[in-house]
Length: 167
Length: 172
Image (cartoon, rainbow over all chains, first blue to last red; front, side):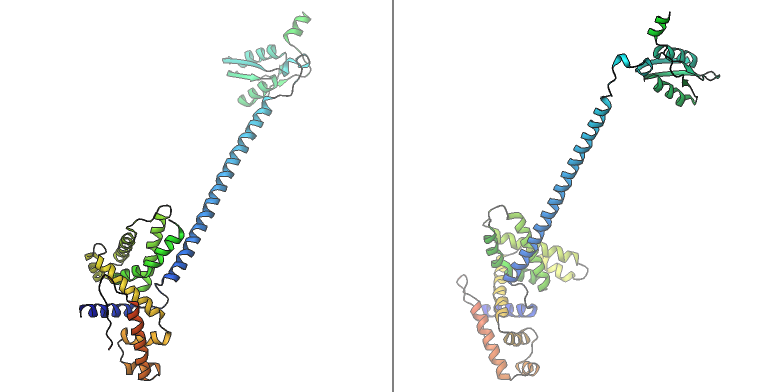
């Protein structure tokens, strides 16, 4: 009798909540497979996208670094000019002054580079500078720093060697 | 664990798990959702490992916990459901046996011919008399009785002897 009551209870419960096409193994498996195939597909697509992103980033870094190297290389390989054909003003020299008058600086530039600099301003200017470059570079820098308009007079070779020769 | 192995376990325990969950949540569609989630968790855990001996217990425990979690989220709406479910802190052997019987009946009902199933559900779910069912479906009372006999026979056959007990179904 106990078993009979138990079964009756089972039957009532199952009948009460029964729904067609629900909680059946075969259909459930199809649903599960479809869901997990889709999950795997999404996962694979996501993994592929991440992989592509990583490769693209690596390629960008490589390209940028090799571009920088080329740029540096370009800058580091100046157009060679044979020393005997290079004028003093085209040579790179280093100047260093601390709180010197502009006049002093110009005098040194003229001596070092063998040039004549014109258009000195009348106002007193104190200069503190450490610079390496050609005469033109130095003059341009001084003009930019002090808002003046120094000019290298053309076709003047007052290099120390020339000056000695003239003497 | 191979896909085939998992599929066998999946199909073996799918409906019983659903019945166990449905006893707590009282909804077949939600029960199915929870069972799917249960198997998803099992799949993630055991996809690269052999299935353990305690796999059945594992499934029931996961299903139980997922059901409780869902009910807790609906606590305000169904406080009674929560108190009943929480009393059973983990799936008992008795509850698992009940779920197996429920599952056998569920599948047997699903396999009934459509009209037979309709008659059966009108009777056992809706509590209609044979006369009322006959009126509802536009068939004779005798036909209703025949359908019910057929349904009970199928359901009886679906319940196998288990653990030395023999289940009998009475006909009314």
